[in-house]
Amino acid sequence: MDLIVYHAADDAESRAALALIRHAGLEPHVIAPARSPPAPVLLDELARRARRPLATLLRAAETRGAGEGLATKGLATKGLATEGLATEGLATAGRPAGAAPAEEPGAGLRTPLVVSPLGVKLCRPAERVLDLLPVVPATDLDREDGAPFLREEQVAATEPRLAKALREAGLPTQDLRASPGRFFAFRTLGGRLVGYGGYEAFGPEALLRSVLVRPEFRGRGAGRAMVRLLTGRAGEDGAERAWLLTQDAAGFFERLGFAPVAREAAPAAIRQTPQAASLCPASARLLGRILQA
View (cartoon, helix red, strand yellow):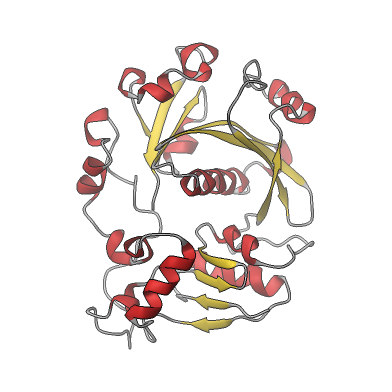
């Protein structure tokens, strides 16, 4: 299978995607866009195949001031903190030695961008590359920081094992059967169940819900990986902002870029969900963050 990876060696997510591909027994053609930038016509083709605006594939789209990014998405006046909301994956200042001149737009291509016969994706998080491989690796693999790589398995909202796990974790289940959301079981590549999670999408808004990590995987970065996978899927569904309610995990989500917001300042679509309107107690905190394009 022919694979091309636009790769930056100093980008941990890019290294992770490359590790996943090689773990699947494939050796891709690796291109460093900073040194061999794709021509404008190729950039346009990559954006067309990725079904994304070209600007979202270039670092320049990420390096706007945080205040500007928040204001354009309507969150600056809703109580969201600006620090850390849109910084994930930002390029560091300056260019690597030997990098192409800044006026060549292809030099600013975000990584890892993976080109496969099955499609083109900006693979952030790196697990997005699994969508582009003919077969998902069947043996476990950990990231450089020790967190396990995960794969998603979509499950029905009516799945009894999902409801049982949520009840045991003390999370609401009363609205599961009527939920419009997408729910997933998260497993290691080798098949061990790590946890569950889902989201409900309402146009540009997405409510993350039912996120739980099995005890044996806590403290290993699995929860962080699950949230990144959920927000990535929500972004693919058109969401621009992610929201959630939590009783006791606010610190964890704030480390992932979420910020506290007063419930009355949330969009109506979020306030009117059963989770926000009745199921989560008044003591549960609402948090939100901007999703990168």
